[in-house]
Each structure stands twice: as structure tokens, then as C-alpha cells.
Amino acid sequence: SGYAQSGYEIQVAKVGVANPNGANAADWETVPGGSFTAQTTTQAYTANAPDLNRTGVRVVITDNSNVDGRFRLRELWAFSNYLNLAPSATKSAPGWTGGTTVFLSDEQTANGQLYTSNVGANPNVTFTWSDQQLISGVLIHGGSGAPNEHLIDYVLQQRDITNSWVDILTVTGNTQKSLFHQFSEAIETDGLRIVVNSADNGDGFARIGEVFIFGVEALPPAPEPTSGLLM
Image (cartoon, rainbow, N blue to C red):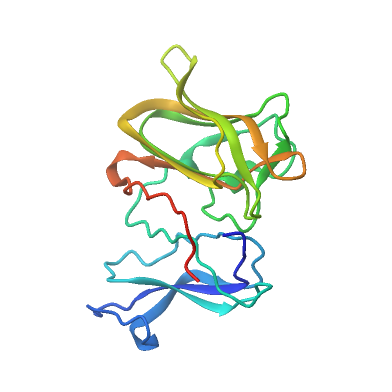
């Protein structure tokens, strides 16, 4: 939404609570690693929720430091039992001058980003594996959180059996920070890369905060585009 929530907690319903009441604190517990303070970005993630069946999830704002004193929530995604292939990949971005590829797959957007001049000589971000992977979707966060950070034009490619890079899809004229691409059919490949052709960050740099690469076993449903705010 362009506004960071300085402090918040991600909570799940306690074990045995069948119908959690959002207003009843006794029904909820904070997930391990789910407390955030002094945030300056508009999005952050935790992947440390207990591996148990739960009946609800909520976000509790503990420190709201927006300039106008209002709390804003653009969108909340709760992934259940998903398979993210990005952490297991070998990542390379030789043309990107700032940050580290570790930021691309640590499932956090609040602690760093990969960035480079818009657009450098080698604008590729590459993920490779030692064997073939079945991939059904990709989620890309263009930036670490500032409201004007997003990728405008980019191409998503896969590596084929001849080691050539083949286009999967092309995005042009994008205005959203986060884009989720769900493929009509799963692709089988040992390499995936993002070729950034244009980005808008207000300072002449392209940025990527996080990439999720979903395997077919636990692909989440495609989120609906968001057009408004909850205030």
C-alpha cells in the first residue's frame, strides 16, 4: 500500500480452537519468528509457522507509525504446506551490483534486496538445480518495500535440454510490486531465469526483494489482483 507497519505479529489459532474469534487474544499464538519491530518496508514474510493444522491466521499491529496515524493492509497471503524450490537452487546475478542472492530466497523481503543500475549490461537473475524440477508458478517481488519499487518489463525463461534459454512469458508495462505467474501446465527444467528490461524505483536502480518458485505438489491458488485498501 506504500505504508510500512512499524511493528506487527503474525499469529495462528491455537491447537484445538475450532472457531477462533479474531477479537479474543486467548484463541491465538504468535508463530516462531513472527514478531516484527521497526519495519521500514511494506512487506515481510515468515516461513516459521508451526507445521500443524490450524483454523485461522491473523496479523496484529503492535506499532503503527504511518504519517497519518492510519493502519493499512493491502493484501495478506497465507500459504499452506507449499513447496518453494528457490532456496535449493544455485543463484547467480553477475550483472547486479548490490545486495546478495541470499536475499532472493530467504522468504523475507524486509531484510535486503538485490539491485543494480537500471538496466545493467547483464540484467539476468538465474536459478539452477542439479536435476530437473517440476515448476508450476513463480512469485516475484520487485523491490524490498518502497511504494515505487517495481519491475516494469521482464522476461521469464527456462533452460531446455540443449542448455538454451527459452521464453516462458513476457511482462510489459507492469505497475504492481508483486506478480504471481501460474503456468497452465507445469514446466520441467533445471534452470529458470528472470531477464529484467526495465524497472521503476525513482533512483535509476532495478530491485528484486524475493522470488518464490513453486513446485507442483503444493502450488497455492493464484491470488486475485488487488485494487483497494483495507483501512
